[in-house]
Image (cartoon, rainbow, N blue to C red):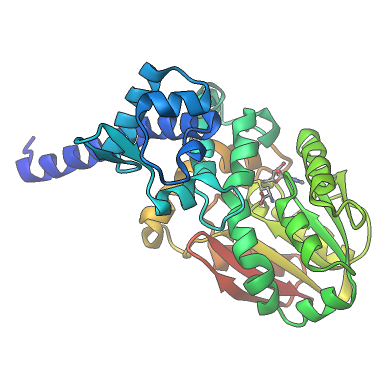
Length: 351
Ligand SMILES: C[S@@+](CC[C@H](N)C(=O)[O-])C[C@H]1O[C@@H](n2cnc3c(N)ncnc32)[C@H](O)[C@@H]1O
C-alpha cells in the first residue's frame, strides 16, 4: 500500500469539516425547535443568561449552544462583552419559514435519515423497500419545510409562466391535480395565486393529507383546495393541469403513473414534473447538489420506489433524459425543460 500523505491530509481535513457540519446540524435543529434563533432575530447582542430568560431555557446549556453557534459562524461573539449576536443574514435564513431562503428544513430531513438507519440497513441486506410512510415524522415535516421556500420563490413567479399557456389558463379558471402533494405546500401556493381555479391535492399517505387539509384551512384557501388520499395511478377526475413535485422518482411504477396522468388530462392539458436538479450522467452529478440528493435517495427515494409495485427506482438524480423516456413511454409526445433552479428541474409534458 502506498499512501500519499498530502492526499490523506486533504481527505482528513475534509472529514473534519464534514464531522463538524453533521454535529452542528443537531444544534441547529435544537435552536429551531426551542426558538433560540427567533429570540435573537432582533439583532441585539445577548448574554447566555439573557437568551435563556427570553426562551425559558437553562442558561448553562444555552452558553454551550451559543459557543457552538459561534464556532460555526452562525452567531458572532464579542469577547469584550461576552455577548453573542445573530447577524441579519443568518436571522433571515434561520427564522422565517416562509422566506425563500429558509434553511433548517433540509437539516430535519438529514436528521430523519439518521433516525431511520435501522430499516434501511435491513433493506440493503434483503433488497426489500421501505415506504415513505414507514419513515419518522421528521422526514415529512422536513420535506415540507425544505421545498416550500422554493415553491414560494419560484412556482407562481417563474415556473408556471415558463409553461406553454398555463398561467393564462389558471387565471381564467382551470382544474388542477397536484399529485404526491405531501403536506400540500405547492397546492396551497398555487391556490393562493389563482383564485378562479380548482385544486385537488392527492397523496397515498393519510397523515400527510390530514396535515395538508389543516394547512389549507389556516391559509384561507379551503374553499378552492381539496386534499384526498389516492395513489398516482388511481387518482380520480379530469384535469387541465397536473403537477408532480419531487415525487415521480419516489414511485415504483412511474410509467404507470404517467399513463394515468395522460388519461386524466384534457387534450390540450399540461403535466408539470418538478424533479430534483440533476444532469443525465452520474459523473456530472458528483458535486454539492448531487451529494445531497444521492444521500437522500439512498435512504428515502430509492427504498420508497422499491416498496411499491414494479419497484422501478429512478433515484433522485434521474435527470431529464431518463424522465423523458418515462414520459414518452406513457404516450406524451412533447417534452421539454421549462425552468431550473439549483435544486429543481422543471419539466413540461404535453400530449
Ligand atoms: C418527497 S415527497 C414530496 C412531497 C410534496 N410534493 C412536496 O414537494 O413537498 C414525495 C411524496 O410522494 C408521495 N408518494 C410516493 N409515492 C406515491 C404514489 N405512488 N402515489 C401518490 N403519492 C406518492 C409520498 O407520500 C410523499 O408525500
